[in-house]
Length: 114
Length: 116
Image 1 (cartoon, chains in turn blue, purple):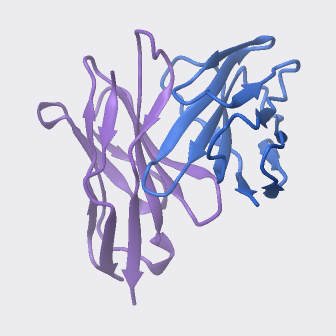
Image 2 (image 1 turned 180 degrees about the horizontal axis):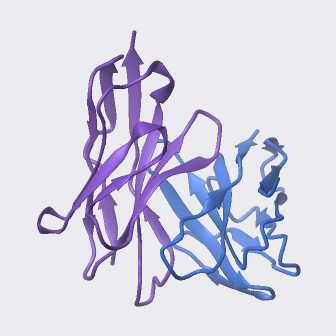
């Protein structure tokens, strides 16, 4: 079955380390997104990509970086510059950016700074 | 800029009772509107969406929502709640134009607790 796979499910990072969260989709979707979820704040957009080798900053991009070298993959790196990285991270995809279609979400990665 | 407000952070209902979750949006044109549900530690699942036509939309799991342009609302309803409906619910709006073109903006979420 087609879907979005996020790995790992749980991730622990030491202060000052960079970590990379994986997101892979086999839905043949062009657009992919990364959201951060904190209790009581809903989901906030970090980065999004409409097409391979192109991506745009979302509302809270500082301290994060992404790449889109393949259509299926959109990894997110949480850098040491991110002051408060402990959160639940969700990856999503859609056929295209525009239009009335919703997003398909992965099951998330919980990142904890130790 | 578009925005979504879910006024209720937490709602508790008894199993079998009716449910209404509120959602208000701020957007200049006709929006695309969505309701998602999230179980603890999981991703989001699409319940239903509105983009045009009939203002009452039906979704999965017996949910429905009504788009009211005059009130800028898109409230989610269910006539009889089941214990398995306990989860967090998110309303979202999608921008059909402008600088935020095509991106989903989410409300803060409403946590639903169901008492037996």
